[in-house]
Image (cartoon, rainbow, N blue to C red; front, side, top):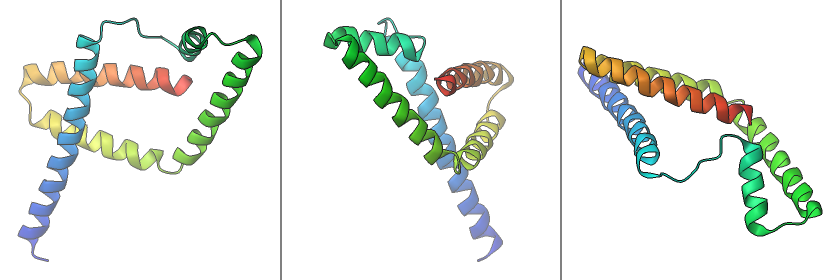
Length: 126
């Protein structure tokens, strides 16, 4: 493959990654802006709201917790091998996007990335 084709292909891939990330960031921001419902801050409150809504007995609540805990552990196990690669893609796309922004936009971008990182850390603790 010629260098021009390789460079064009790399630019297209980076553009697509950037578009996906920007779409995710915009979706995240829009969700926060337009969804004014109370959002659970942790897994326990989320589970409690679900159990209350379904009017579960205590035995059913324990069953729900057990099933969801098992599911979460299995998901962590499945994602563990690919997590570093996903993180690498995410960070590379963020850097490319940031490089295309003005200084003011970069500051706002950094705020969005910080919010995403906080939410991700909160999700990982669940």
